[in-house]
Every structure is written in C-alpha cells, then in structure tokens.
Image (spheres, helix red, strand yellow):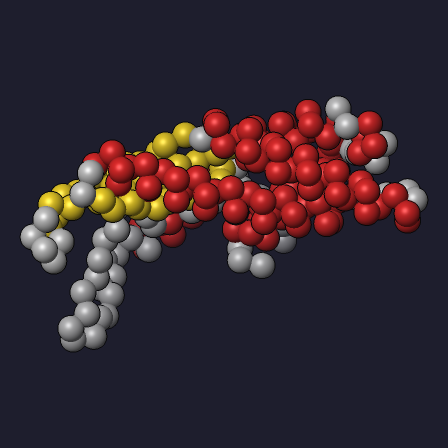
Length: 194
C-alpha cells in the first residue's frame, strides 16, 4: 500500500502537534526559589542556522555606561561564538595539496577569519533592548541595560568568500560551495551543542 503525502495533510498534522504542545506547563520550583524572566534572553535569542545571536546586560549608575557595557559584552560574546565556529570550519575545510603548505594556508585562513569577524561586527543588528532602574545596597540609583544582537550567517560567509578569494595562497585550495557546506555543518553542530 502506497501512501500519498499531501501538503494539506502535512498542515493538519503540524497544526495538531502544535496545538497539543501548547498546554500550560507549570515549572516545579523548590521552596525559596523564584523563577526569573531575564529581558532579551530565551530561545528566540539563540543562534540558529541563519543567524548568530548574543545577549548581555550592563549595570551602572549611569544609563549610557550601562548600555555601553551591555553592547560591549554582547559584541564580545558574538565575536567569540563566531570565531569558535570559524576555527572549526577552518580545521575541517582547509586541506592543502601539499603537506608543507597546510600550516601556512590554515594560518592565513585563521588570520582572514579574525579580520572578517572584526569588520563584520560593524554590521551587527540590535534585536532587543530593555533598560531598568533599581537601587543598590547603598540606596543609590542603578541602571541595568539588557541587549540582544544578531548577525546574518550569510553576510558572514559572503565576507569570508571575498576575503579568501582575494588571498592568492588560499585561493588555490578554496572552493566556495565546499566552504559553505562545511560552514553550515559547523553551524548545525554549534546550534546542537556538539
């Protein structure tokens, strides 16, 4: 017996599974514990296959200083995440035709990676911001600034492509489609915690 799978059937199955998972789930907490909702955080602010994301907060008696701290922390986290993924991409992608040349090609690849990350962070987009005001233990006014930022993975790979294809030593062994495939595999691994 051969089953014919249609889009309306798929839509009904998907809707059914979504509705059945929408029930309210109470999270059990121990006595004395309190569930905290942190602004600009949660699963919608996680890195996915298409976008790198980072979130952070800053705290200061001055709102602008709190904002600058939060943005600086988020950018640093984003840069670290990107560099981790690109290090793995470089390790898995760069295969030199000559054994003696491998180290030089990998070194140039990583140097290009650092340059591209630094340049690309200029294109970061802020996707969430929340500022709060509270008092510290000395009853002094204190600002907390929460922020989430993102960067397109496609924009990043395009900048890598431009940087790598302009480097004569790396260009010999560079294949954009293979690079993109390796990049996407590492993004999946990063997202899945592997």
